[in-house]
Image 1 (spheres, one colour):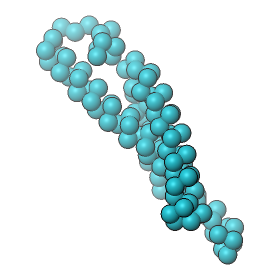
Image 2: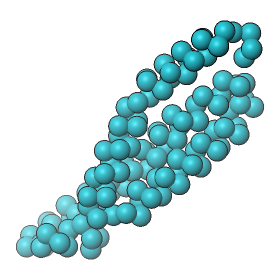
Image 3: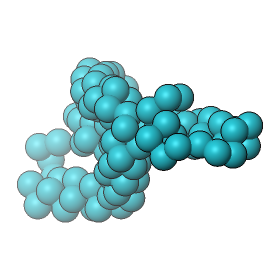
Image 4: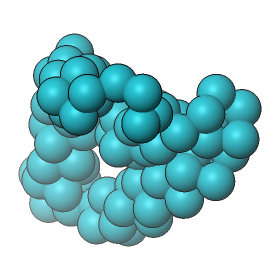
Length: 115
């Protein structure tokens, strides 16, 4: 890593981060959506998922691809947490739809919390 100028690594890292910003946007959107539905557990677990992904990638990737592997820890944390939230969001929405189809006269306060 010391063979390249520092400017190269800075630009490479910022390019990687900017290319993967879509996963951060998904993360924020689905986290807020689930919290709006009254679920606070899964958004909290997504924070744990971010931490686990950062630690695992920081420990494993540098051994496999060199010191540059540490750059992937941030974007993999975003992607892992976003994946958890997206999967849970769509399964939760499916449960809500099934609940509405079975009982069309559903009160608004039961939709987000009773499932």
